[in-house]
Length: 142
Image (cartoon, rainbow, N blue to C red; front, top):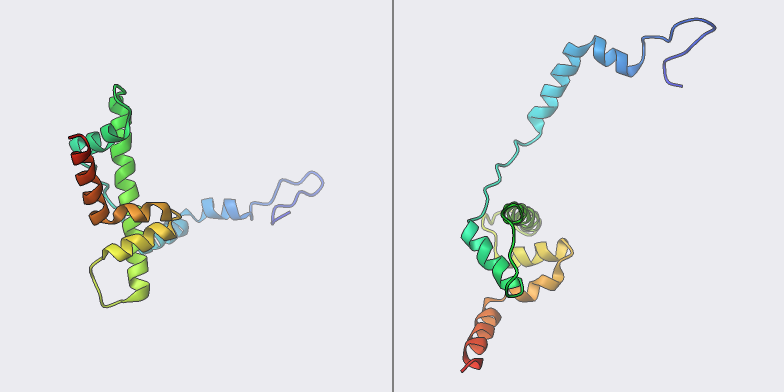
């Protein structure tokens, strides 16, 4: 198996890929640095405002149900990651369709949601429907 061979009583050969990487660590380090230069720098994730997240969560939870501080932080981070993911998919969609355009449109976001397997969320994006639903809810309590 591999380059390491064991003869009767002989020690295994030091010519294995793992050992070569250890022995030639300077070369491996240079290769790592070269690889890292081609990998994009990590994006700093900014968390969403706590009040915004609280309002969204409160509207989704039944009355009287509360959420812990740790869960709030987890939801803030999850929402930020989700937004970055959808934005990346939307950018990919935009670049496939029209390279010259530099602004993401609502259609790019809709396409990104479909690409992410979340097509059931697309109807919720229409602001006209949302305003109508709020308007009906406001008047239904009269």
